[in-house]
Length: 261
Image (tube, rainbow, N blue to C red):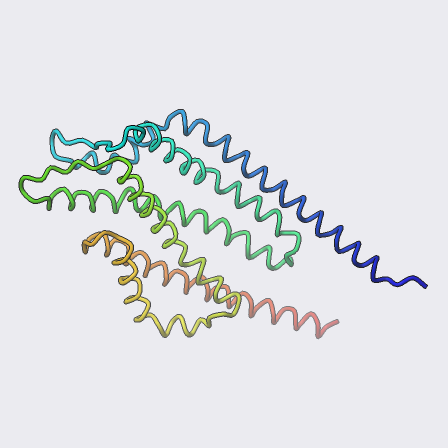
Protein backbone atom coordinates (compact mmCIF):
# COMPACT_ATOMS: atom_id res chain seq x y z
CA UNK A 1 0.00 0.00 0.00
CA UNK A 2 1.47 3.36 -1.06
CA UNK A 3 2.27 5.90 1.63
CA UNK A 4 0.08 8.99 1.66
CA UNK A 5 3.03 11.23 2.57
CA UNK A 6 4.11 11.99 -1.04
CA UNK A 7 0.53 12.84 -1.96
CA UNK A 8 0.24 15.24 0.99
CA UNK A 9 3.57 16.86 0.07
CA UNK A 10 2.45 17.32 -3.54
CA UNK A 11 -0.85 18.80 -2.36
CA UNK A 12 0.93 21.21 -0.01
CA UNK A 13 3.37 22.21 -2.75
CA UNK A 14 0.53 22.81 -5.20
CA UNK A 15 -1.32 24.91 -2.65
CA UNK A 16 1.79 27.00 -1.95
CA UNK A 17 2.38 27.61 -5.65
CA UNK A 18 -1.24 28.61 -6.19
CA UNK A 19 -0.99 31.08 -3.27
CA UNK A 20 2.24 32.56 -4.67
CA UNK A 21 0.66 32.94 -8.11
CA UNK A 22 -2.36 34.67 -6.62
CA UNK A 23 -0.10 36.95 -4.57
CA UNK A 24 1.83 37.89 -7.70
CA UNK A 25 -1.42 38.62 -9.50
CA UNK A 26 -2.65 40.84 -6.66
CA UNK A 27 0.66 42.72 -6.52
CA UNK A 28 0.69 43.28 -10.28
CA UNK A 29 -2.86 44.64 -10.19
CA UNK A 30 -1.95 47.02 -7.38
CA UNK A 31 1.19 48.14 -9.23
CA UNK A 32 -0.75 48.79 -12.44
CA UNK A 33 -3.30 50.94 -10.58
CA UNK A 34 -0.52 52.94 -8.91
CA UNK A 35 1.15 53.54 -12.28
CA UNK A 36 -2.13 54.52 -13.97
CA UNK A 37 -2.99 56.85 -11.08
CA UNK A 38 0.44 58.46 -11.26
CA UNK A 39 0.03 59.49 -14.91
CA UNK A 40 -2.45 62.37 -14.33
CA UNK A 41 -0.55 63.26 -11.14
CA UNK A 42 2.65 63.59 -13.19
CA UNK A 43 0.88 65.76 -15.75
CA UNK A 44 -0.30 68.16 -13.04
CA UNK A 45 2.80 67.77 -10.85
CA UNK A 46 3.53 71.51 -10.70
CA UNK A 47 -0.07 72.31 -9.77
CA UNK A 48 0.00 69.68 -7.05
CA UNK A 49 3.22 71.13 -5.64
CA UNK A 50 1.71 74.61 -5.65
CA UNK A 51 -1.28 73.22 -3.72
CA UNK A 52 0.95 71.53 -1.14
CA UNK A 53 3.09 74.67 -0.80
CA UNK A 54 0.10 77.01 -0.41
CA UNK A 55 0.04 77.00 3.44
CA UNK A 56 3.59 78.37 3.46
CA UNK A 57 3.29 80.66 0.43
CA UNK A 58 0.23 82.37 1.91
CA UNK A 59 2.11 83.49 5.03
CA UNK A 60 5.47 84.39 3.50
CA UNK A 61 6.39 88.08 3.73
CA UNK A 62 5.68 90.24 0.70
CA UNK A 63 8.23 89.59 -2.02
CA UNK A 64 9.49 86.32 -0.49
CA UNK A 65 9.30 83.10 -2.48
CA UNK A 66 10.41 79.52 -2.29
CA UNK A 67 13.77 78.73 -3.87
CA UNK A 68 15.60 75.79 -5.40
CA UNK A 69 19.20 75.14 -4.45
CA UNK A 70 19.52 72.31 -6.97
CA UNK A 71 19.48 72.47 -10.76
CA UNK A 72 17.16 69.46 -11.16
CA UNK A 73 14.94 70.10 -8.14
CA UNK A 74 12.27 72.08 -10.09
CA UNK A 75 11.77 68.96 -12.23
CA UNK A 76 12.35 66.11 -9.76
CA UNK A 77 10.63 67.48 -6.66
CA UNK A 78 7.12 67.90 -8.18
CA UNK A 79 7.40 64.44 -9.77
CA UNK A 80 8.37 62.97 -6.41
CA UNK A 81 5.31 64.56 -4.85
CA UNK A 82 3.12 63.31 -7.71
CA UNK A 83 4.23 59.72 -7.09
CA UNK A 84 3.42 59.90 -3.38
CA UNK A 85 0.02 61.46 -4.07
CA UNK A 86 -0.72 58.71 -6.62
CA UNK A 87 0.23 56.11 -4.03
CA UNK A 88 -2.11 57.70 -1.47
CA UNK A 89 -4.97 57.86 -3.98
CA UNK A 90 -4.44 54.24 -5.03
CA UNK A 91 -4.09 52.98 -1.45
CA UNK A 92 -7.76 51.86 -1.12
CA UNK A 93 -7.35 49.58 -4.15
CA UNK A 94 -3.96 48.33 -2.92
CA UNK A 95 -5.46 47.47 0.46
CA UNK A 96 -8.43 45.85 -1.28
CA UNK A 97 -6.03 43.54 -3.11
CA UNK A 98 -4.40 42.64 0.20
CA UNK A 99 -7.84 42.01 1.68
CA UNK A 100 -8.89 39.84 -1.27
CA UNK A 101 -5.75 37.74 -0.80
CA UNK A 102 -6.19 37.05 2.93
CA UNK A 103 -10.00 37.01 3.12
CA UNK A 104 -10.47 33.37 1.98
CA UNK A 105 -8.49 32.21 5.01
CA UNK A 106 -10.57 34.14 7.54
CA UNK A 107 -13.59 32.96 9.46
CA UNK A 108 -16.92 34.65 8.84
CA UNK A 109 -16.86 36.62 12.10
CA UNK A 110 -13.27 37.69 11.36
CA UNK A 111 -14.32 38.99 7.96
CA UNK A 112 -17.20 40.88 9.52
CA UNK A 113 -14.74 42.57 11.86
CA UNK A 114 -11.72 43.03 9.57
CA UNK A 115 -13.43 44.75 6.63
CA UNK A 116 -14.80 47.73 8.62
CA UNK A 117 -11.43 47.97 10.36
CA UNK A 118 -9.67 48.14 6.99
CA UNK A 119 -12.01 50.83 5.68
CA UNK A 120 -11.76 52.87 8.87
CA UNK A 121 -7.95 52.71 8.82
CA UNK A 122 -7.89 54.21 5.31
CA UNK A 123 -10.35 56.95 6.23
CA UNK A 124 -8.47 57.77 9.44
CA UNK A 125 -5.20 58.07 7.53
CA UNK A 126 -6.82 60.48 5.08
CA UNK A 127 -8.29 62.39 8.02
CA UNK A 128 -4.84 62.70 9.61
CA UNK A 129 -3.29 64.03 6.39
CA UNK A 130 -6.16 66.50 5.93
CA UNK A 131 -5.89 67.66 9.54
CA UNK A 132 -2.18 68.33 9.06
CA UNK A 133 -2.74 70.33 5.86
CA UNK A 134 -5.80 72.37 6.79
CA UNK A 135 -5.23 72.90 10.52
CA UNK A 136 -1.63 72.34 11.58
CA UNK A 137 0.25 73.79 8.60
CA UNK A 138 -1.42 77.24 8.59
CA UNK A 139 -0.87 77.65 12.32
CA UNK A 140 2.67 76.32 12.25
CA UNK A 141 3.90 78.30 9.23
CA UNK A 142 2.28 81.48 10.51
CA UNK A 143 4.22 81.06 13.75
CA UNK A 144 7.47 80.34 11.90
CA UNK A 145 7.24 83.40 9.68
CA UNK A 146 6.11 85.66 12.53
CA UNK A 147 9.03 84.73 14.77
CA UNK A 148 11.79 85.19 12.17
CA UNK A 149 14.52 87.49 13.59
CA UNK A 150 14.84 91.00 12.12
CA UNK A 151 16.96 91.04 8.99
CA UNK A 152 16.26 87.36 8.21
CA UNK A 153 14.14 86.71 5.13
CA UNK A 154 12.46 83.31 5.04
CA UNK A 155 13.17 81.67 1.67
CA UNK A 156 12.58 77.91 1.94
CA UNK A 157 14.13 75.40 -0.43
CA UNK A 158 11.39 73.46 -2.26
CA UNK A 159 13.01 70.05 -1.75
CA UNK A 160 13.50 70.58 1.98
CA UNK A 161 9.93 71.83 2.26
CA UNK A 162 8.54 68.73 0.52
CA UNK A 163 10.57 66.38 2.71
CA UNK A 164 9.38 68.27 5.79
CA UNK A 165 5.67 68.15 4.93
CA UNK A 166 5.82 64.50 3.80
CA UNK A 167 7.20 63.51 7.21
CA UNK A 168 4.40 65.43 8.93
CA UNK A 169 1.77 63.94 6.62
CA UNK A 170 2.99 60.45 7.47
CA UNK A 171 3.21 61.27 11.18
CA UNK A 172 -0.32 62.66 11.40
CA UNK A 173 -1.71 59.91 9.17
CA UNK A 174 -0.23 57.22 11.40
CA UNK A 175 -1.22 59.10 14.56
CA UNK A 176 -4.85 59.00 13.45
CA UNK A 177 -4.56 55.19 13.24
CA UNK A 178 -4.52 54.97 17.05
CA UNK A 179 -8.15 53.72 17.33
CA UNK A 180 -7.44 50.92 14.87
CA UNK A 181 -4.26 49.94 16.73
CA UNK A 182 -6.10 49.85 20.06
CA UNK A 183 -8.90 47.71 18.66
CA UNK A 184 -6.37 45.26 17.21
CA UNK A 185 -4.50 45.03 20.53
CA UNK A 186 -7.69 44.29 22.43
CA UNK A 187 -9.04 41.93 19.76
CA UNK A 188 -5.85 39.84 19.72
CA UNK A 189 -5.72 39.78 23.52
CA UNK A 190 -2.29 41.45 23.76
CA UNK A 191 -3.69 44.25 25.94
CA UNK A 192 -6.72 44.22 28.22
CA UNK A 193 -9.30 46.97 28.05
CA UNK A 194 -8.93 47.64 31.77
CA UNK A 195 -5.19 48.26 31.27
CA UNK A 196 -5.91 50.88 28.63
CA UNK A 197 -8.34 52.66 30.93
CA UNK A 198 -5.99 52.54 33.90
CA UNK A 199 -3.00 54.01 32.03
CA UNK A 200 -4.68 57.10 30.61
CA UNK A 201 -2.30 59.44 32.48
CA UNK A 202 0.81 57.72 31.14
CA UNK A 203 -0.61 57.80 27.61
CA UNK A 204 -1.24 61.55 27.87
CA UNK A 205 2.40 62.12 28.81
CA UNK A 206 3.60 59.73 26.09
CA UNK A 207 1.66 61.45 23.28
CA UNK A 208 3.09 64.84 24.23
CA UNK A 209 6.60 63.38 24.29
CA UNK A 210 6.05 61.74 20.91
CA UNK A 211 4.62 64.94 19.45
CA UNK A 212 7.64 66.85 20.73
CA UNK A 213 9.95 64.40 18.94
CA UNK A 214 8.06 64.33 15.63
CA UNK A 215 6.87 67.90 15.18
CA UNK A 216 8.97 71.08 15.01
CA UNK A 217 10.13 72.52 18.35
CA UNK A 218 7.19 74.80 19.03
CA UNK A 219 4.38 74.35 21.52
CA UNK A 220 1.65 75.09 18.98
CA UNK A 221 2.39 72.27 16.54
CA UNK A 222 3.18 69.84 19.37
CA UNK A 223 -0.16 70.53 21.04
CA UNK A 224 -1.96 70.36 17.70
CA UNK A 225 -0.67 66.80 17.32
CA UNK A 226 -0.80 65.58 20.92
CA UNK A 227 -4.40 66.52 21.72
CA UNK A 228 -5.95 64.74 18.69
CA UNK A 229 -3.78 61.70 19.45
CA UNK A 230 -5.13 61.50 22.99
CA UNK A 231 -8.72 62.04 21.83
CA UNK A 232 -8.23 59.24 19.31
CA UNK A 233 -6.94 57.08 22.15
CA UNK A 234 -10.25 57.62 23.94
CA UNK A 235 -12.11 56.83 20.71
CA UNK A 236 -10.12 53.60 20.45
CA UNK A 237 -11.12 52.62 23.99
CA UNK A 238 -14.78 53.19 23.11
CA UNK A 239 -14.43 51.09 19.93
CA UNK A 240 -12.62 48.35 21.86
CA UNK A 241 -15.38 48.34 24.49
CA UNK A 242 -18.00 47.90 21.76
CA UNK A 243 -15.93 45.08 20.26
CA UNK A 244 -15.54 43.34 23.63
CA UNK A 245 -19.28 43.57 24.24
CA UNK A 246 -19.98 42.16 20.79
CA UNK A 247 -17.60 39.24 21.40
CA UNK A 248 -19.29 38.43 24.71
CA UNK A 249 -22.72 38.48 23.09
CA UNK A 250 -21.50 36.23 20.27
CA UNK A 251 -19.94 33.79 22.74
CA UNK A 252 -23.16 33.66 24.76
CA UNK A 253 -25.14 33.09 21.57
CA UNK A 254 -22.83 30.22 20.54
CA UNK A 255 -23.14 28.64 23.99
CA UNK A 256 -26.95 28.83 23.81
CA UNK A 257 -26.90 27.26 20.33
CA UNK A 258 -24.58 24.50 21.55
CA UNK A 259 -26.84 23.88 24.54
CA UNK A 260 -29.93 23.52 22.41
CA UNK A 261 -28.21 21.26 19.88
